[in-house]
Image 1 (cartoon, helix red, strand yellow):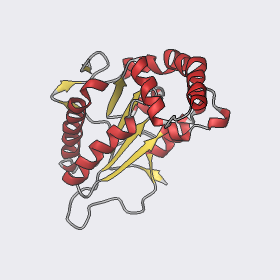
Image 2: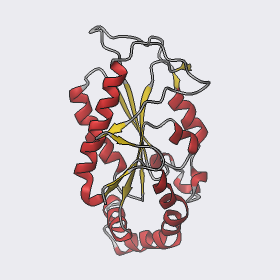
Image 3: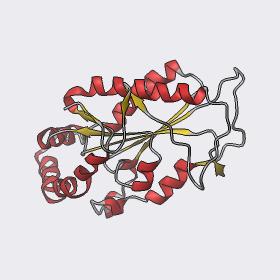
Image 4: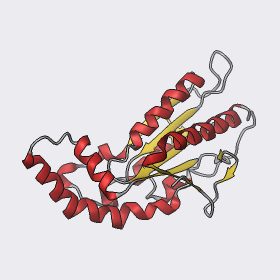
Length: 226
């Protein structure tokens, strides 16, 4: 394993339960694959890593340190130009309710996105996602929602909204994905045009200025499509 010397484009997509972060990442991935055929694009679904039998309904369900190590190391033996002479680009989408929770993960994310949705819409999505068919299944889901998911959203997930560079409501996902695609494309072009060796801090990857429609995404400024 070695520290990444070429840089990665890490995009963290958070939001409430069943807001479709993985689905959004897949839509953007399909567009990127067509445009940048040599790119290595991965999607990490944090929600799928939760131990459902021992679920805490909090950040304790996740090993953020291991995720950070995974994102900031490179196990490829050969990192360089491909046969066409293009710089390979690695793009990683970190998706899930807690994608914006950890400070270290946020610090290496080129773009932080929060998918916003009201409680009624999230509950409907949960029913559809879990393919609820019987009254017993519906009763079980409603109990989980009232006893655990609702409080988890209020205490742990919704507060991460303030860290987002881009806030996308469920009614504006098409516009939001277009802005994300445009911004990621600009970062890829910047990476491809950068032939200089970048000096890295320990366990850090190079951070680039992420431009989404030429908006400065500093902590105090973000895109809210609500």
